[in-house]
Amino acid sequence: MANKYDVVIIGAGAAGLMCAATAGKRGRSVLVLDHGKKPGRKILISGGGRCNFTNNDVAAHNYVCRNPHFVKSALSQYSQWDFIGLVCQHGIDYEEREHGQLFCLDSAKDIVKMLVAECDLPNISLRYQTDISTITQRETGFSLNVNGETISCESLVVATGGLSMPKLGATPLGYQIAEQFGLKMVPTTAGLVPFTLHKQDKDAFEELSGIAVPAVITTEDGTSFKENLLFTHRGLSGPVVLQISSYWLPGQKVSIDLLPMLNLAETLIELREQHPNQSLKNTLSRLLPKRLIEVLITRGDITDKPLKQLNHKEFEQLAAYFHQWNIAPNGTEGYRTAEVTLGGVDTDELSSKTMESKKISGLFFAGEVMDVSGWLGGYNFQWAWSSGYVAGQNV
Ligand code: FDA
Image 1 (cartoon, rainbow, N blue to C red):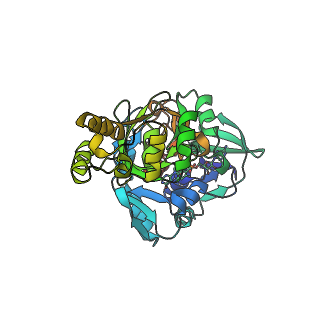
Image 2 (spheres, rainbow, N blue to C red):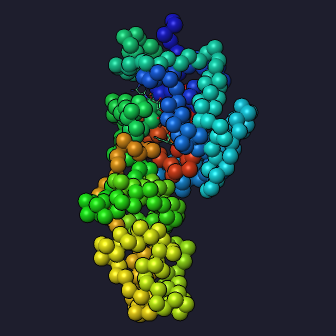
């Protein structure tokens, strides 16, 4: 009897805890299983320790999913305003940063404490360091072998997250469960991840490591983001690169506008009037970091000479170069540093209103394990809260 629950949730992360609290409040008996030692490990390190827990402006277009409409129902059933309400109810101070991103003022620990407090009901149990060896479908519900013990439940929620940051406990268990029950998968790959560069570019730009510039970055199919670009020892990072990485396909080039705030050709023409003897290098070094200009001259991408020796055509060529700096990434840093996993359980397999499998009654998915990945900016946690809540309402 003690090993029978209405609901078993695999994963005590963002989606699993939200799902447990929601189902528990409905009076369901709930067991949450996690192989780690504590809950919400990704929440704790998120947002530089301050957890960017949601965004003031959340819409379907902030998500990458094969079915762009899938997220709409869950996001409206449990919106950012619902989560902000919960945060306020728990007296957690937060601040708004640029692009509507909401962060804890004090610590991400506040969010984990809040979720654990929400789960503090007599009908909710949390068990850590569990090893799930088998999952079997029964006539009604499922039975699981957990640390050698049999546990049965009516509803099973898979909230095991994605593959990013294996050192924080990421495993493919959720995908294996989907495959075991014959659910289709969208191939997985790292998202919100820095780019690595081909050797020649890496060797040239690694000395710029730490330099950041505002930029607009655009993929070959025209998807574009405007934020900071950061040069690293391995390649390119910064918010603009993380955002575009979720849309970039291997082998493609990206086009980077290194001077999105101005029209370079017009600016150079004006500056030539004012300072005809000034060198191109010194002129450009007033607009962009000097070390970057020096590297581009060393590479032979631009030639230094006094402005008065440059004609209109050359100004246009320089403008084209800096406004459309084309670079072909070699790849990404992969799951080791990625914030999310693109792909996962195919949303065609799931009801967008309940998160239940269309084929297997009683089997639910919540959070990043499915083919839903948000932009940088609190969207991934919002998806975990919304999908976790919806699953919790229907288990
Ligand atoms: P999550 O990964 O949170 O939880 C999955 C749980 O399942 C884990 O507790 C894990 O231990 C457990 N599990 C896995 N395999 C298991 C197994 N075999 N057996 C039992 N348990 C198992 N997003 C955002 O919106 N704002 C932000 O500021 C950040 N910042 C950020 C920083 C970093 C460094 C990373 C890596 C990620 C972010 N994210 C983020 C993304 C965000 O953390 C992520 O999308 C959510 O945590 C997903 O929530 P889930 O509950 O789906 O998975």
